[in-house]
Length: 460
Image (cartoon, rainbow, N blue to C red):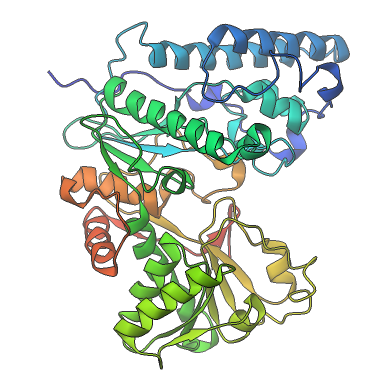
């Protein structure tokens, strides 16, 4: 007998969606604890211990209540935080029948880190007490959380729902672990643990990898969970990049030039360049900080499309200058204000499409130079809304504007493969433009369209 998802993660009235002005004052507690030597606070990635986590949150609350004795909300925030932790651990440890028979799972890491406050708000609806502390204390307290459900999608025709699952991979891991081999080993273990949770305890057969997870797992090939169909999400992303380029070109100079800039030639960038060049009227100009990566992509593309349609830039400045539409598919931040090469660049009537998460370009810096910054985001237009989230995971206000119906390309891929039962398109290999188009077609058949151009939670 098919079970449908029976548990509310948190109803909207339980999730305090506060804007910046309403949030309580942040208190720096990093000096209260020995973050580097105390085993309680020292990072121990890939280890999930409910009891240790509970001790950390209670210690945090005790100090906050002493410092803010008149604030009656702290105790409630602690209770809400512990409720979410306990509920998540009950599912993860399967102390009770989960009752889940998920149609697909979309796995996402956290963008929260120990130095930056920009993305930390994405966890506040679940762990509201963490909004009160500094970035380092917040990250060290959060670290140790098990794989957990962040949201569910609207029920499909078969009475099943997709699930959005937190994967405990942190940006701080390379610095905290300080060994690349060990970092990769632990990261892959965490992803494997999360896939096991999503497949064996939540019932999802299609597992989509979000953000950097394909990169750390060799496109999912290091994952070993029998019966789980892994898909990188790269096909949906490449298709949606192409759709975003089409939409962007409509808004620049009455159509803009047919030369598209491509910064970053990894798995997404190289495939996107190929996808764009399938249109015989378009050319691309390429750049990657790795000369060997750039040369490899360049040679492959000119062999297929000819040297008159594929150009190489010597640097990012040249690439942007020669393109009205530029795509960025990299993970390294680009700070225009601090880069002498880019500080005085004129971006008038230019659009940068940033596929990086966290974003590599700063919207304010791009707009200050006359340009526009768009992220690669689609929208669920299916009448049944099967790719629309029930509660609306908001990414802390730094994600899609409509946090329910607007989705990422990798998210659209997993949901559409499940919806169309196109399991043969689940892939853990590099994406060709042909595969991206096939995945794009099932996304369209599932009702996904490119969303209104936007970035950082605001429309252009």
